[in-house]
Image 1 (tube, one colour):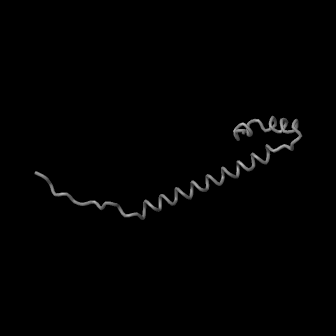
Image 2 (spheres, helix red, strand yellow):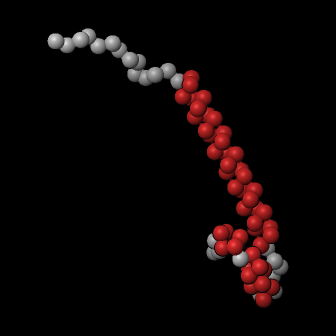
Image 3 (cartoon, helix red, strand yellow):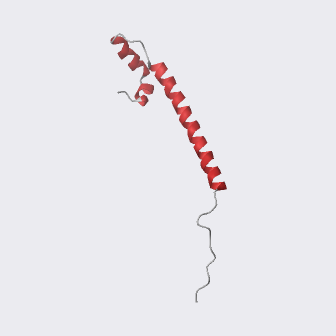
Length: 72
């Protein structure tokens, strides 16, 4: 299995190695898929962040704060 970072850094080497084996070059499509995945992950994290912020704003404090009697 190849690391996507390696593919991004060595796209030409990957395509050359695939050509030696008689396969079509795939680096461009793999990089495009990775960029799409990264965008979707970022979008998901933004949505989760907004959800968590809304949850913090709307959630009541539990347990409720109870005033304590002063001790002598």
